[in-house]
Image 1 (cartoon, one colour):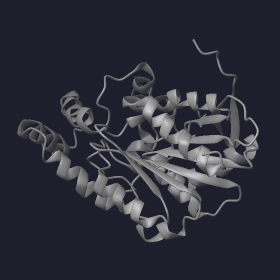
Image 2 (tube, helix red, strand yellow):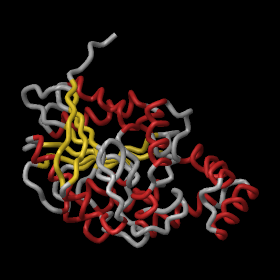
Image 3 (spheres, helix red, strand yellow):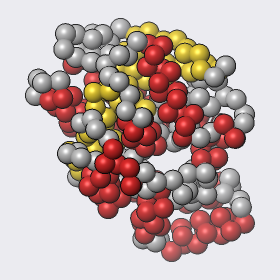
Length: 299
């Protein structure tokens, strides 16, 4: 059994509130830390916890809960929840933890956030890894609706009935939604660390409902018209894209990102959905490590 990695936890002050963080491991010569941005928005860090093992390559791995979810403060003010707030929070975490040189990884919404952060041209950003983060929400939604149209007719009818009646919080709707999730979000039985994310999201869904909507395929929140597709050419750092063959963020959706970011590398993981890091963790982490080593001149 591998020796336990050193862990420190604490809070970063941000806009009068507290953002919780965890630092795993320590940096060795020539290696820079990796900052992990979770998805949702509002889905907390838990489902990315297995990626802490990346610290065994000799770098710090930092997880944090974005404001409004998980172990961070939960101010209840829907007007707060904007992409600009969360971009600013990335910078606050970096400054507080002294992450002068850093790689940034983001899954789903976290991938969107990583791209937004890169567009601010921050000093010391070495690379970004976008794991299944779309650059254009309307085009992503069109693809999600295509996937939804392939669900069994009775499942589609149940989803539509509750969306029309605004009863998407009903157990029947949630059960029907799981059919989509098992195909395109996470194909394996949820490990405890993944279940912890969904449980906390159910307890306090304000950020998710405000920005996204009640489910992954009923996007009626403030992000519904969001797009940076025409700005991807401004991203100047080395970029790795990872997505799943059966991902809800489909290959057609991620093609926009791959075509738009100069010299981006794209790894499409066969047989995986939106949580490739959970479904094929060893291959996923080997892919991330190889990219980081190459960026740092060790590949």
